[in-house]
Structure formats: structure tokens, C-alpha cells
Amino acid sequence: MEASRVVEFQLRSNLRPGPAHTRTYDFSLAEQLSTRELQVLSLVAEGMNNENIARRLSIRKPTIGSHLRNIFGKLGCNNRTEAAVKAIRLGIIK
Image (cartoon, rainbow, N blue to C red; front, side, top):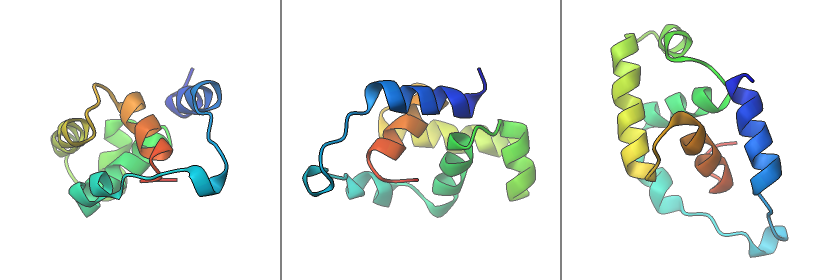
């Protein structure tokens, strides 16, 4: 299953949002992420791999790994799928 489908599946099976007025978002986490980290996280959520993200952002592949490690630390996640799901749930990315 491709990454974007995994994220979609996890969102559909685990996310049970209440009415819009009862949802809360943790903007402090979003503020901790740099602009580049948000860009990387958004592309991860789209299902892109590190090589394609590096090409899209015109940066080196090892730099993507560094950004992902920073993202995982800031969001308290262990992998890219978990980070994408958490960011979507918290409203950090769409």
C-alpha cells in the first residue's frame, strides 16, 4: 500500500473528529516546526519518498532525513506515517 493510502486508511479508521466547534488544535507544535519542516511534512503526507521530496525542494536527500528527524522529535513520533497522521489530526497540515 503506498504511503498516501496508508495515511488515508489510518485517518479513516482512527480519526473520529467531533463537531468542528469541539475540535482543538495544538498550534504550539506547528510553531515549533520550521517552514522547511512544514514543507517536508506536507510532501510526506502526500506520499512522497525522500528522493522525490529532495528533488521537489531542490535540496539534498540527507537533508530530508535531518528534517524528518527534527519533525519526529518535535511531534513525538517514530515514523513518517505517524508524523503525517498526527499533523493532519492536529490541523498542522491539510
